[in-house]
Amino acid sequence: MAQIFHRSTNVLSRLSIFGFVFILAGIVWIAYIVNRSPYITEVGMAQVQPVPFSHKHHVSGLGLDCRFCHTSVETSAFAGMPPTETCMTCHSQIWSDSPMLEPVRESYRSNQSIEWNRVYQLPGYVYFDHSIHINKGIGCSTCHGRVDQMPLMWRASPMQMEWCLNCHRNVEQYVRPRAAVYQMDYQPPKDQVALGEKLVKEYKVQKLTDCYTCHR
Image (cartoon, rainbow, N blue to C red; front, side, top):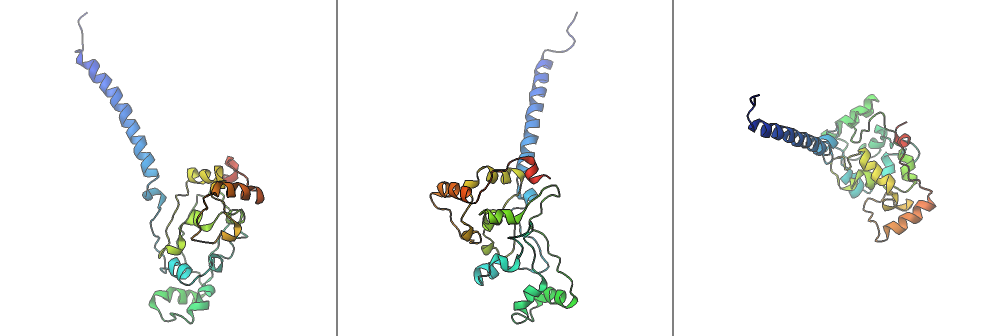
């Protein structure tokens, strides 16, 4: 029987098959890169807020402790947002006529909360508790970065499952003394692993990596 297809068809077929594999691998690689890019994670992208609140000014400049505004961070799953009365404690006397702070004054007059845009937003199927991390010696800057150097707040960590598990599996590399939890410029010592192993035992820290730890 005469040959129907030219021999070059075999070459084209092989090239098509191998080409499809490489194209598929390329798509997967691009998806992997995009999923970890600031476009998805929003790392380093400052959030627009009703009032351009500067952590750099209030924390580094004025020396305010995190708990001055985030009052429930040690006892609740949520760090909490300060009521307008907290802002007005100072701003009824300082910059009381600033146009930039008019939304704060309006909130105080109307008793309507300011609608801040969340910087860290976890999916609804993820459970996270601030208090347990704080009380186990995980510092604010470990997740939120150098907030004291941020004129506008941005996300410092991707908050993806892979990132969380890295800490849960190697907690001795991140745990610090409880007295230093709110210290923004904290630098791990050279013997961090040895210190971490000691603190893990002292604070009874468990390496929780089961799915139900966060997905309840």
